[in-house]
Image (cartoon, rainbow, N blue to C red; front, side):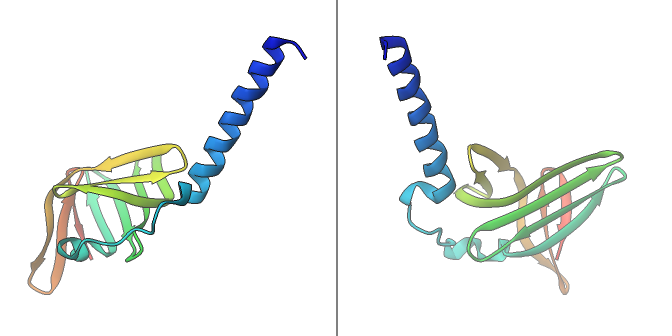
Length: 124
């Protein structure tokens, strides 16, 4: 094999290893919910500007998200929370990440729990 072919093979192998590590979590330890963020756990729903938003957060850090606005739909499924930054949280799935901006963390309003995420008031 020539030098160019060896280099291409090494790059391809490196990419394959990166994808496998990303899919398997790279051997990192399981996510543990911070005690002060447990109120985030649950199925949240809200409406804004004619659209809908659904955000489901499990105690293991799994996140499923769907936001519909007219004919546009954005979904994230199979993601895991990787970190909290103040009230905001970041999720990752494979090589993609997204940050959810929480302007009002979970609070109780009567018997209903609410929070504001990405400008949308959600209830559970």
